[in-house]
Length: 141
Image (spheres, rainbow, N blue to C red):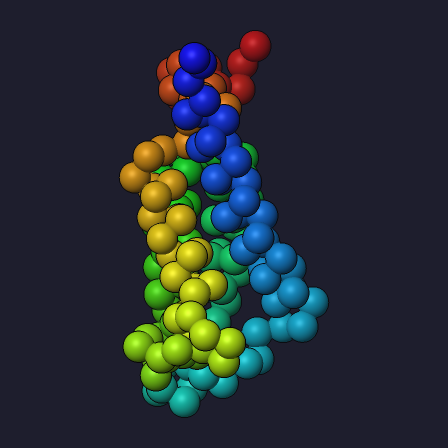
């Protein structure tokens, strides 16, 4: 039986990165005013809201490509923890409207990104290609 670990890692990276990328694109279209307001309400500087673009666009794109995968996954996890702390602080131990944990989606994102950080990108990634060459040879033929 063949080992499909690398295919599984690719599917996991593309799934979690691709799904979060939709949230990032929505923020590009609608802006980050809501996040700025939540930060201001907590007494935090509103310019921190721009960090959402790193967590919801840059990190997911890196995950999909498999480039700087482990750090990108950890940035993704941090972004989601901040999102939970800002938007859902009272929901940690609540049951949702239709049953189940109120933070199922957020928990899914946090835990799957953490798994990617732990298991790495796999062979089908730019990280794997990068590691086969010295850094100065990466862009050469």
